[in-house]
Length: 374
Image 1 (cartoon, rainbow, N blue to C red):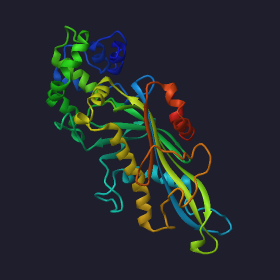
Image 2 (image 1 turned 180 degrees about the vertical axis):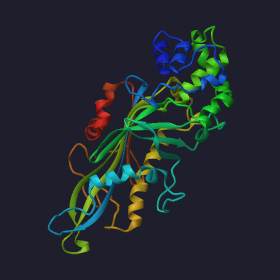
Image 3 (image 1 turned 180 degrees about the horizontal axis):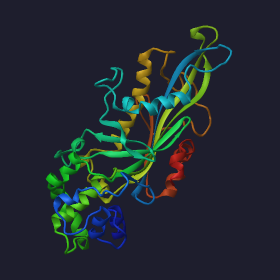
Image 4 (image 1 turned 120 degrees about the vertical axis):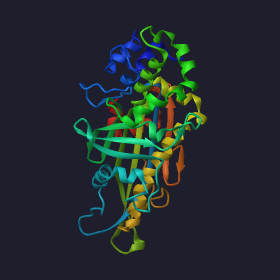
């Protein structure tokens, strides 16, 4: 059971506060109308970051997904590969929506359609850069709600360096008519399932100044504007090695790379923890959805380049195309695989256990934005 301090913190109210304090944080003053609850305060930035230590709740979560790929090159005196890790990373960052979304309108048939969609939003900036808006195509709450129409997750760039880029999860601070309108028109379904048990545990949140209905909607608006997770995700492309390829003739070589994404985060609100605790029936398996989403991105990137037919670009198989070197950031023992994608994923009851897990300890140094948030 979460403490009252954790519950209030997850809803954005100061410790010892109430829903009145939360309403004030949302830019509302009593008396409230139901539409006021979804209004935008005009004096705030479009986003606030959801920091893993300050805003996260519950277990620490870490994952690492990696795909190896190869491309051939000819010895021309420079020994430079046809592709460079920095150029490939820049291509991924610039065309992230293409590789993430996969097949569909304006996308090539070599890629697979993802269960989620992302779009760059130049009209909503974070750290003076474009933000990214994610929507997931899935039904939750025992099939009663289509998340794609009623919730979005936003991230903003916190690192964009040679070979690596990273994003921070965000809380949306502006009104979205289609999404926030759902809270005003149909939030009752959620609270029919969860509202009673939640508010029985925190009765002091229901102050005399707020009716139960308005109180629920204040909480719902606050939570629905938050990314599901508090933390960061990072991506990197690394050139591993060059090996001789005599099958192609004298002077030909194969360059081995990997493309990896990793994250360290926690749930961003008490509501997220409640959803997670209900299991697959309510939301679907969150960990499996995470793997499916990011595995699709990694595979799409390689499949797109393979279809272009340049430099024999293709997936690389450890033990067949190359031997993994005996260095920490090339782990031999991933927990599982999704086809060509190698996967580590684990939850930890505290930060110390997480950072001392061998695969996490090896992963963090190659994802500086993940390490710096801890």
